[in-house]
Image (tube, rainbow, N blue to C red; front, side):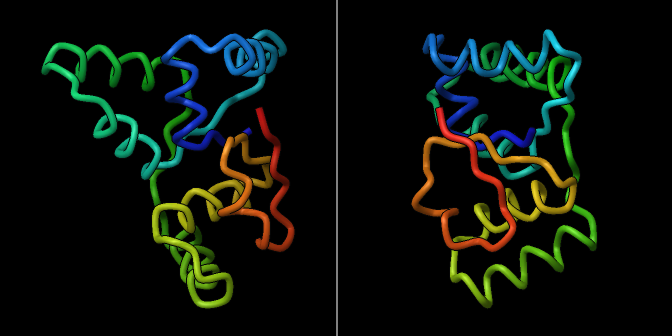
Length: 123
């Protein structure tokens, strides 16, 4: 499963529905992906102290699979930007899910609903 920024933020806030939705795949041995733009957005969302930034970064890197942007993801993101007209970070997030053939776990269905072949799961 690929995680969107809003899902990670809700998870970090301890929202029950999100926490249980993410813990179930963990318990089943699934790998949860964090695209590079999600990592950037999460670390820039809060007014973190330097210590909180390090702790959050460590938590993300130890518990989720960080996905670097590569040429394949960039090409898919560019196609999405041309055809669906979504923001660049969302295009990369969707492209990561499409590239790895995983559903996207998000609370923001509106930005992703017009992307063909993207499985969107909501919490």
